[in-house]
Image 1: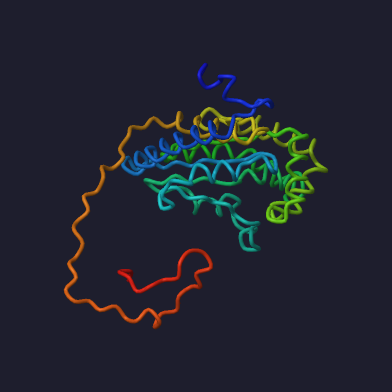
Image 2 (image 1 turned 135 degrees about the vertical axis):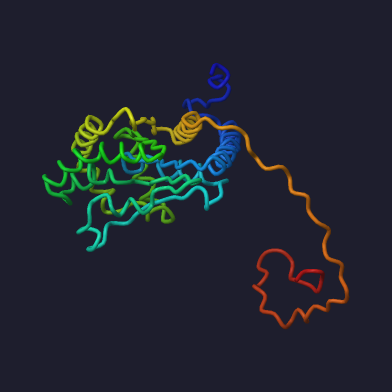
Length: 281
């Protein structure tokens, strides 16, 4: 730990320098690949929930976790608002179909906890629906754990000042403005309300079988590394990385004649050289 906190690793603002961050992230991603092999080999069912303030960086952490992983093993679930049919279903029903099967890790970018936060604050659920959620959620999660699912819950804690800075940054960047939804902007007006619902949510759902883990999200680089490091520490694993594959020799050419290159519709080579009649197929 002392080596991790060497002063030379941080800039004048106390943020990990980019080369150091990239090196640490690459190492953690290598470990995530090992974890992926372990999950698949041992048929584990891993469900990781990411909740927190708008613009807290949940999506950024999820993308770094899955960046090097096989999407067949590590799936991201980010559901849109419920359909009219889903609104009439048992509340947890739309989430159950996305839970992990054996050998899978599923990462929920927001989850059933929408009811405890967004729906509660914005009035999208009734008081009775909210109270029923708070009663049934702990039992629902205990049931998941008893079924063999490893349930891990992260809350990304973001300060008022940093959220405002990120909102302004997104608003002034045309390529990131899509990240500002009406719900995001409305959340600014309900900062205290969201704080109260989070406190109530923790009081009812921070259970022994599936506790909440809080991530300090004010510095994205630190939040990503800290969260991934913690995730790796939760599930004991061994390195089951496959050995390099022995590649068989290529088939010998017994007179294949390639069609004229002009007979194919090539994408214009705006970058690089134009294709020529070589050994490509």
